[in-house]
Length: 462
Image 1: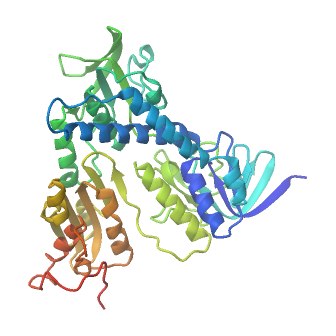
Image 2: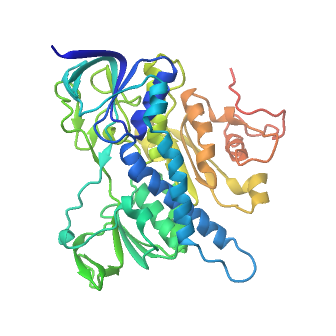
Image 3: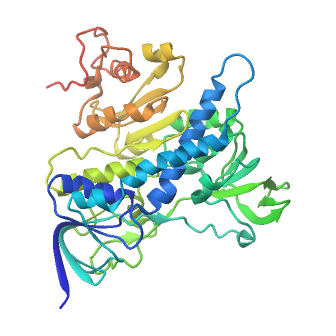
């Protein structure tokens, strides 16, 4: 007789998002089971976090070098940078050890999970029935399938922390969030970088916010080509040669990285048995992560989610808390591009809002107008707010330093259906959040009001 395990929440996938959801639900008292065949943490530990840590360290080191005053700028010690990143990785590995998960009474079932019916999963010789399921199976690098690709050995993202020194030149195929961040990281390590995209550059992002990022990358020496039709690859001089159709001269580089969109891992999950609809882009969900089966949710790459892994973790925790009965916010999750300057967006872009609404409003303010920016010497960047005709905030975006720290203001505002005028923020100390206040004061209901008034953070008017 098959052993049937009953639980409140069953999560398929023990990677970063899956275990973030498991911990969040368990802390609220839910009985949680995680199904995972491979090592806990998965590619989040072996690829996502190492790449993020490597790129973050390289971008910071390059910024520090560029800010050097007097004499020759110091060289970046790559060996030390790599050692520091590897040391930091140990802290993350501890989060995925069996001990802390067992302390939260999270049960791990080893095996590949597959639905046999709408509320039952078979895994590791056991049947698991749950009130709700979360699919967090992640993704794998999509095969590029370029002519001659089998003749070259690309630099894998898992190998970034094993190289002895940065390559002198590098080709990156795929101008995704990850591709852009990798490009800047290697540029600041002294590598000549060429970034190729076979289509448009991030066509679903706001071009106005993306432009300052691309401008900065160009200043740092990036060669960026969109709509590049790759004709083939071949070894050349110990490196790689890439041919572009319609272009006489090929691109030569010491190394090549493929950073295209990942391939969601959804095959073999028995989704038809669970009556879950999916496509090549991943499992189809609503804005809250719910699939066509109301008992099943999908998050992260499995649902073809945001390119930002930070967004996947936030989504995982939010969905898990909701399923565990927590009545907290289901605010939209921000998308974060971790370049310098940073770009962070949430809700509807201007283009998406124009498609959905007959009339919209656009409010802008520069970060350079704030006292904090003037004191720090970083005057670049701006905030953009998208509203409907009544002034209710539909979406927002920031580009500039600390964009990721400021975007949460707008997630809350969208969730609470606040109007732009409600963000008439006056901080007690100089902060970049003053830019949100400046944009709010440009809204029709605020024009003419006094700028200085009693201090408060977020206020909703009745």
